[in-house]
Length: 156
Image (cartoon, rainbow, N blue to C red; front, side):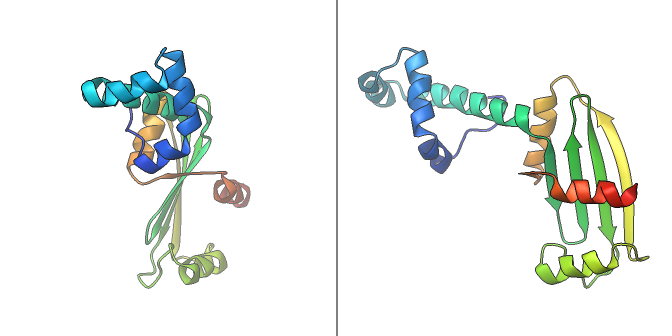
């Protein structure tokens, strides 16, 4: 597998797409049932291929990722050529950016000496979707980029 197998819940959500995928493999509903019982390893391989196809489609469209922890925000803009990073570090030990109180504190104090910023960019490796997936594996979530865009404006 190139990425990660979809969860049972994700597969259930994508049931119509999975049926279409099996149809493109010339696998009927009856054949799928037989495959699962008589050749489970082949059925597992089909699920893995489907999972990779779904991930490939999702990752090719991702433009923004966020990874927010207690005192750090890593905001990524994934362009065609490179990954751009806006990194925020809060040096107030009483603040947790994952909470409403902590984030509200940050919005009021984003220009204070208790907040540090860093920007960076990095070219993709051989496969940009694999690079994006690595960020997701490390805890980043796909977003519309509102936070990144807000920071980008205030930093200009």
